Image 1 (cartoon, rainbow, N blue to C red):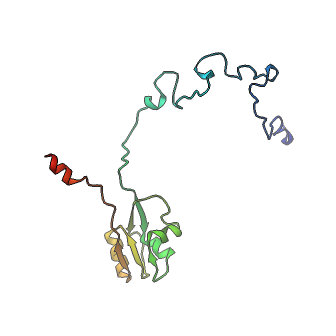
Image 2 (cartoon, helix red, strand yellow):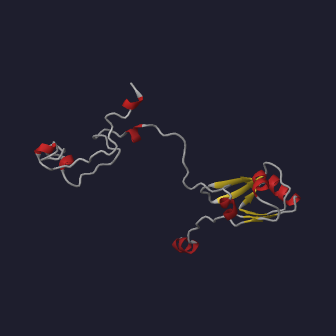
Image 3 (tube, rainbow, N blue to C red):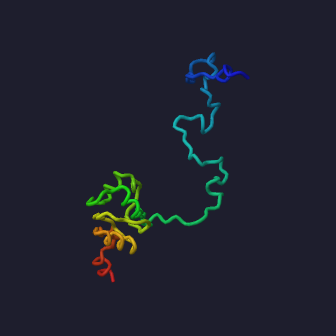
Length: 164
């Protein structure tokens, strides 16, 4: 094989199938759907995992572990990152962390961890602080602002009291 033969027989722009345009086209009459049956009808749709009435692969394969959809997603930032990306006197908030691409993923609670050292005076706002992170930030002359965490939904107690 030579280099000029690599793309031989490959069309850059493939012509679309023109269905139902006469027998000469090769896809006339039944338009490639065959005769009768569910799949020949208009509006036919099938679940993507359907396997001809057999137990679908998705249901046959064993699942492992547990996925808690109610779990709190915790975003983490280390003190070393604050030292590296912020200058003295800056305010560290969820928005500024997102701008600096330190925590630009989906989370519901932000936690500052104590890995690394900090020497700059910063005002850090987060939902949670590790003990070591809080000590290091305050030792550098900064302040830790604890943001209120999202509260769990509590059912109306008055309704449940009336029923009893």
